[in-house]
Structures are given as structure tokens and as C-alpha cells.
Length: 253
Image 1 (cartoon, rainbow, N blue to C red):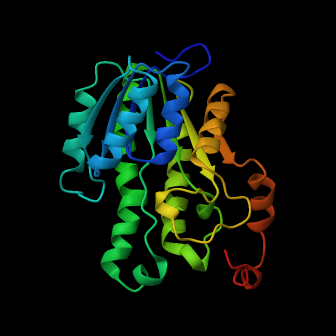
Image 2: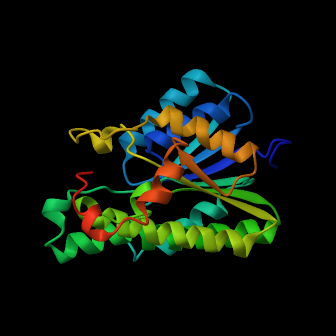
């Protein structure tokens, strides 16, 4: 069950190698977390998450399973199998994502399809399975890592931004469907310094996995539906969304 602050004890992470998810689990480990099931396509990154968490919280129960959101032929089976293996489930963290390389991907239909599948259709499919289970049990929390990139899709990363826009809207609709028994928290980070963004120019107001994790915990305890990280992005994006496209095209980020 969720504790009195709404924080989970038993968590399923889709995108188990995510650095933001790793930081968030570290925060939860200090206050509520008891067990974790990590799902993802990369064993090494999930092993790193496991090692770091157990070093800090040796009493945690941590398992890993393979799940590739791009493998649409096995996705339903894999996520159903994972859910069936969990004795207790309080929360689902959707942390999967693939940034890609816009300049190389935009002309390749297969890469475009891959980006949309990993960032939108795969997560939406997996979340539907999870939502059904949480709704049946009558309680739970879903945390969806969206992005400010979906608030105003830009030329420089429109593949990633368009997919995140779809996921963001899906998550908000899911929140309305599940309310009030199951809560959905949509997280909109700005540019986050991670392995995925290594080598890319960091724009102003970039953040870190740890800071995003802190903002997520704050959002959960305050029963928010949307969390911006950093918070200053909210008023900035309210203005940015209404700029004429001719001006948006001139912004380098």
C-alpha cells in the first residue's frame, strides 16, 4: 500500500536503467521503498541500478526482467508476465525513452517508427496493462516521465518531441480515467544531464536526475498531477507555447 504521504513501497519500473528512475528509487529507498521490479532492454544499466540501490539499502528486494518496448510482437506477453510475477504493486514508473539523433533519424522511416514506438506507442501499451491492474485492485500510483519537448515541438528534436507530446496527452487522459482511486503524475523535465544526452549542448535551465527525483517526490506528496522540473519551466513554457512559429524556428534549442 502507499504510505500516509502517498509514497510507494512496491514499485515496477519500465525503463529500469533510467538514471532519473535510479535517482527516484534512491529517494524512495530512504523513506518507503521495500521492493522493485526493473524492466528494460539493457541488463548492464539495470545491474548498475541494482548495485547502487543495494549498496545504500541492502534490505531491498530487487528483481530484473527483460522488456523491449520496441518489440511489439512480445510486449503484451512480457508486461503481462511481469505483472503476474508481482505479489504487491503500489506504483508504476514509466521511465523508458530513446532520444536518438534527429539529424540522422528524420529521413529514415524505420528510425522514425522506432522513435515513436519506444517513446509513445510502447509506453502507452504497457501503461494500459498496468492501469488495468491498478484499477482492479482499487489503488496505486503511476508516474510518467514526459518532457518539456512535448509542450512545443521544435525542429531540432521533433521526433522525440512529437512522441512525448503523445505520451503526455495519453497520461493526462489516463489520469482522468483512473481518478480518484489511482493517481497519475506526469513529469515534465527540461534538459537532463544523463548518459543519453552526453555530447549535446546543455541549454539554460538544464537539470540533473537527482533534482528531477526530488521534484517528483515533492509532486507525489503534494498530490500533484503535473510536475515541471525545474519549476521555472512552467511559466516559461506557457509563454513559449504561444509564440508564432516564425519566432520558434529562430530559437536554437
